[in-house]
Image 1 (spheres, rainbow, N blue to C red):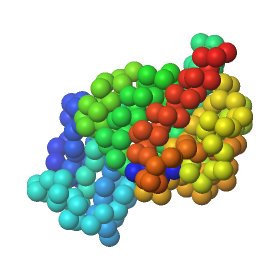
Image 2: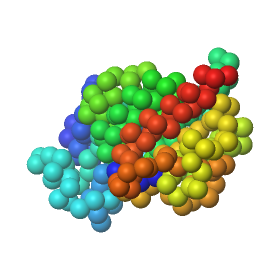
Image 3: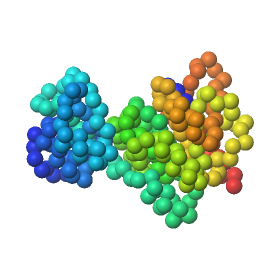
Amino acid sequence: MPYQNKPTRPELGPDEMVFGVQSVLETLRSDQQIDKLYMEKGMSNPDIQQLAFQRRVTIQRVPVEKLDRFTRKNHQGVVCLVAAVQYVKLSNVLADVHERGEVPFILLLDRITDVRNFGAIARTAECTGVQCIVIPGRGAAAIGSDAMKTSSGALNHISVSREFDLVDTVKYLQNSGVQVVACTEKSPRDLYETTTDLTGPLAVVMGSEEDGISPEILKMVDTHIKIPLLGAVASLNVSVATGVMLYEVVRQRAKQ
């Protein structure tokens, strides 16, 4: 729904930028989790590319001007950002949820790119009992200090999973007995008039600020719902819309 160059080194800070071929290589070889990896268009480095592939880190090809905006030092055509959180496997989250006897409540964010939106969403998700936020391997906001600040520390208390392909993630959730519900203005089903039961194992999908949920995901979900809009403006900010959707889940579950 649319809404608006050093060798081996010590542990990095949560929002540290690493640049230069050797430094990036050492970071990829370490247990640090990479949030973003940028490489100059046309550049080839088999060692970086192989390590990135092994760690399932997407290389984003960008013009040199973008790398220059990160640093005016000699970046050698490659820059990476270290994640402020430790990503977890969704399968491990679900296993832990079941072990604790809880009902799965997962939030999938399809290409949310605004850092402040992401932080605000994470804050609401933690407050509503969401056990894990799932983001795609590419096309999502960098989880750095800005996101951590906007979340008011909520990102310290909620699991974040970065999955290579959200389409595969939807399939996995469905095969695990989790109902996947998309919030999109393209739906004919009103959130407050639908008979959709949101009290069982559930994953809510929210889409990017620009073009909403991708068509591939919309085709796969179990159902979709729209938030009614009574004014002249055609859409809500995605963090606000997420709050509306998540608290409807809270409301339904509280009535049980």
